[in-house]
Amino acid sequence: MHIRNLSLAALAVAMPTLSTLPALADAYNIVLVHGMNMDGASWRPVYDILTEQGYKVSIVQEPLNGFDRDLHATQLVLDRQDGPVVLVGHSYGGVVITTAGNDPKVEALVYVAAFQPAAGETTGTLNAATPPQLDPASVTISEDGFVSISEDGFLKDIAPDLPEVEARFLFSSQTPTTASVFTAETHDPAWLHKPSYAVLATEDRVINPELQRMMYERAGSLVTEIDAGHLVYVSQPEAVAQVIIEAAQSAD
Image (cartoon, rainbow, N blue to C red; front, side, top):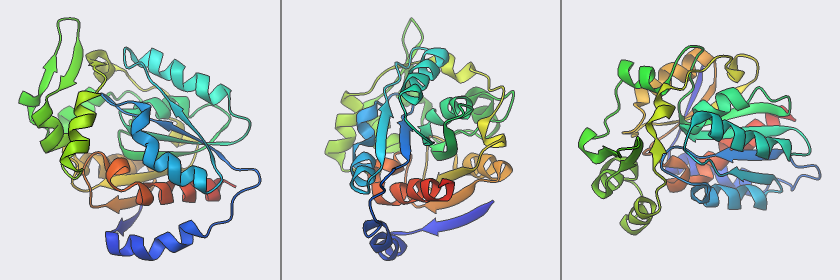
């Protein structure tokens, strides 16, 4: 595992390189997959940066009512792509891309503060081994088995480094997620066969940073550490976009 720490100061140096990249004539396709209790619109800051650089970006809208359905939604987007793909997943989206990444169009995987399970693992077993710092009191499960996060949980644990008004909006627009995704077992991890990149959010309270480190290390992922909370792709979209661009260029 190769590790880089990307602070705001380092990003200020790196960004001129990103901003002066030539637009690609045949841009790599980039597919973005969100995590639990979120929707695809949360990728908008990263989408804007990537499209300005000439990449064709598609965003999966997972229904979050079952792993197989989320996988199917991702596959439908992959089927529309007209060339090689960099597949990106945040949080639970990492579980989805670990399976969906076996699609032959996918050239590289990018995990953004995400689960990167091995064969036989689930998010439940991973969290049990290295528990998150998320306050259990902020999690509620409906009678039909859907998970929601309280407003206080969003502000304190999910989005502590976002402006409060934005964190409250994400709370208000959250998509409850079936608890069954915690037991979805991975079988043939795509990262065994394809290069992977990872963003390790050092202040993450949802996926323990040490769990992220363990998963990324065993996968041999190229890791960029960013001092940010769980929604690092919202709070520091330039840094996350830089990692995705690197994956696209390396796959070229």
